[in-house]
Image (cartoon, rainbow, N blue to C red; front, top):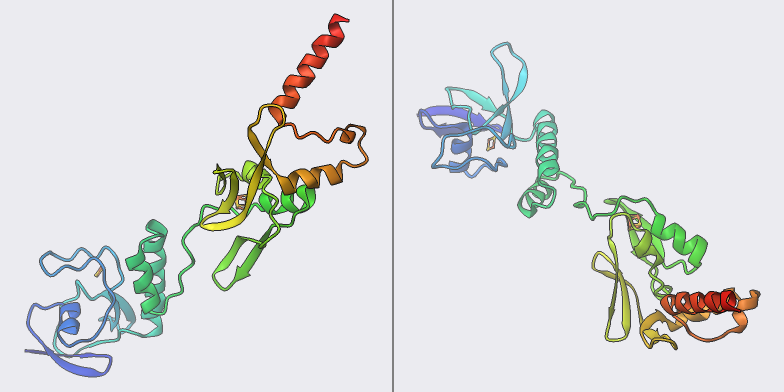
Length: 250
Ligand code: SF4
Ligand code: FES
């Protein structure tokens, strides 16, 4: 048997065993992902790094799934050097597999803070800006906490115009018209859910009541606003085409 020390705990290991195997047998935890008892070690994930003293007397990190035990070997599993190495290794793995729950959970278990997985938003704020500056509904806001920033709905403010969805370059904001109701959502959060009105020309559902009211109120000064009919954009196009043709034929 070979005597080694892990985190000041002396234990006996078998000849040919790796430090990781000896640690596991003695219930000493070292994070690892690419180790498998039936396979030769590959040193791929780098999570199992531990601190040892090199022959030159320097503190270095070595992979415990590859490092073989030897008499009087002293190992640290939680030194600052190991923690820095572990953080770097988790970062690298999470860059390759940002949604992998097993890696995310393991990182958290080892006290490594993990940024939320990408949500498909590039934080361009187009949705928020258009909703504030043009639509003036202020139905979206940027919320920032310790995990970063994200676009969130401001409850009860959406008018269901869908302008944010039209501008969103990543198509993260969606508009769904179903059963006479328009639902505007971002990720799995509902921004607004409002009933749709029918066009007086073609009978198609085309806009929400609250948005039509908002348009009428903001166009109050415009001469065309005297016409209070509810006409969808396709019918408006058709009617103005007909009006133009009639003027030409006079
Ligand atoms: S949701 Fe879309 S429009 Fe809004 S900030 Fe993200 S990417 Fe930009
Ligand atoms: S367990 Fe992956 S490098 Fe050691």
